[in-house]
Amino acid sequence: MSILKVRCDCAEILGSHIVSLKPGQELARVEATGDTFETAFERFVETFMQANGDRLGGNKPLFWFNIALTIDGLSYNPGSFEIGRGENHVAVPISIEDTDVLLVVHADGRGEIYQPGNTLHDIGRNLIRCGYQLIEIFRHDWNVRESLRLDDQQLRELYEERFDETINPTLDDPFVFGRCRPEGTPLEFLEGSEEQLRRTVADILHAELPADQVRWPIEVKLLDLDAARARERNPATVWEDGSDATGFPITLSETVIPLIERALRENPFEGSRYEYNDGASDRVSGYDETPEEIILYLERPSHHRRLEAKRRLSAWAGKRHLSPEFEGSG
Image 1 (cartoon, rainbow, N blue to C red):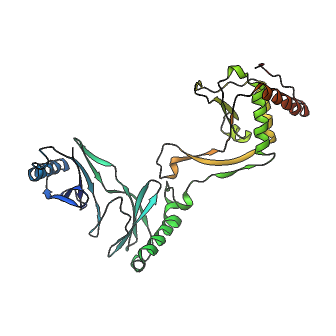
Image 2 (cartoon, rainbow, N blue to C red; image 1 turned 90 degrees about the horizontal axis):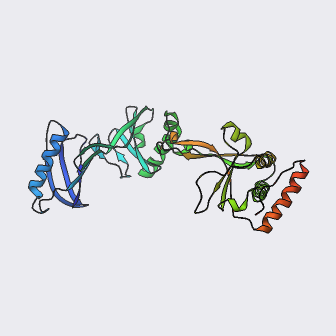
Image 3 (tube, helix red, strand yellow; image 1 turned 45 degrees about the vertical axis):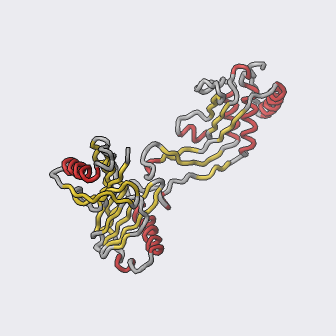
């Protein structure tokens, strides 16, 4: 089945359409009118099939409409990164994450931000999409006509800077761009060290977990005690990571939890990162700040490694007047 791309080169729903089987190959230039888009579309398909039905063997193709945004007689469609220069406006595409927005600045002080539109109609197997849809309006005091004297590179840099500094930060939900890009804070140990924390926790788990009852390897996630308390989360979670893992966290004994908490108390750390929350990937609201974690992957210890871990842990606990009781013998 042929897939044809139908582009509408005007902002109105009705009008002239250029139908292409592939870029640069024009099949027909047809017009369609109607009281509704559905009526116009049906007439467009009928007209198109009358002109091209024989060469397509009577098969009705799949149509994809892109209805371009038109400003001062200039048309804009997503996917083009060219700057638009009108008599009274400038249009600058700005790349944000996996999409682009169109920044349109008018000489009369109006400003608009457009984003690629979603599907407006689905008629049968045919998708009709508006190229850009208006999502934000703002005011400015910039001399647009003066800026039009710049070359394209200078113009792009100027308006990307203005977008970053004066427009985006004032939006209710800023775009993930420039200074508004969510960035966490680097992992930093306030006392102790990451190496010391990893070594102590590894000894605790190698010594305490019953080796024959765990599906090794295991994944260990550690949160700073203050961060865990603020978010009402466990400071340590341990998961089986093998091919036959249960998918549930390992229940830690009442012996091992205080030991891990003591190791965390002696090696406090801070830091954060942002994680995608299934929201809008190009907006700040689509990301949540979460504390940094220390992650360990531990293989099943050999008998010798387990005995060494018990010996070191016993010495570590003794210096702190702790008395761990180790479970298991394997």
